[in-house]
Picture 1 (cartoon, rainbow, N blue to C red):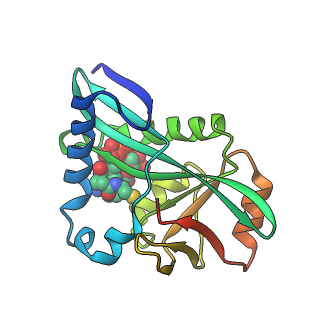
Picture 2 (cartoon, rainbow, N blue to C red):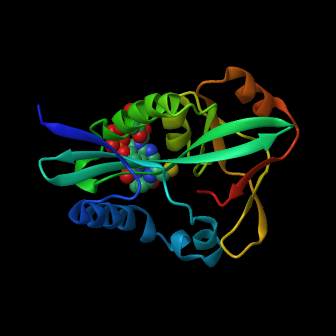
Picture 3 (tube, rainbow, N blue to C red):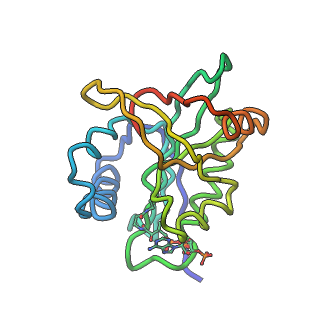
Length: 188
Ligand SMILES: CC(C)(COP(=O)(O)OP(=O)(O)OC[C@H]1O[C@@H](n2cnc3c(N)ncnc32)[C@H](O)[C@@H]1OP(=O)(O)O)[C@@H](O)C(=O)NCCC(=O)NCCS
């Protein structure tokens, strides 16, 4: 069985080599799709993560999951959101359970970080993604949420999934309410 190393590191990464590897893998995994080059999509993502979960084989970085932290107020209740973003696995290493490993670690880490719920943005019309995230308790949030993009525009979108972390009650409230969830500065 191959030897994989797992690291959980805070932002910003101090190791310059690792930082470049992270940027490279994120770029290969996300920035090559035509959708990534749409200005609206670029303007929606501008936050720094709180933590990186990184999986490497020897010195080769093979998988990334970032955790973003966001505080919000929903129907007068304070919520700590653990945002997941940037889940990716190097092409040659896909199909071996690495994404699942990253997600399991991220769910535990968000508990430790006192997150009430977790939220992520994905193509909710792709059943493979939905099925993957369902396993970790995520359900499609079937209504619009709001955020402010990089240039200060208030945007509405409908491509999120949410899961309970430390508060089943806050999760249920957000999931079942008709109110609009304002997540603040961008889709991470
Ligand atoms: C999606 C991705 C992270 C999966 O990584 P992986 O290590 O191959 O995944 P795993 O081996 O842990 O498999 C987990 C599940 O992901 C699903 N999956 C695998 N490849 C997938 C793909 N290309 N698209 C969507 N889902 C995929 C599988 O259905 C699998 O489910 P199963 O365990 O029930 O068979 C990887 O294909 C990737 O990096 N893609 C590019 C970036 C991306 O799309 N990230 C997700 C953003 S929301």
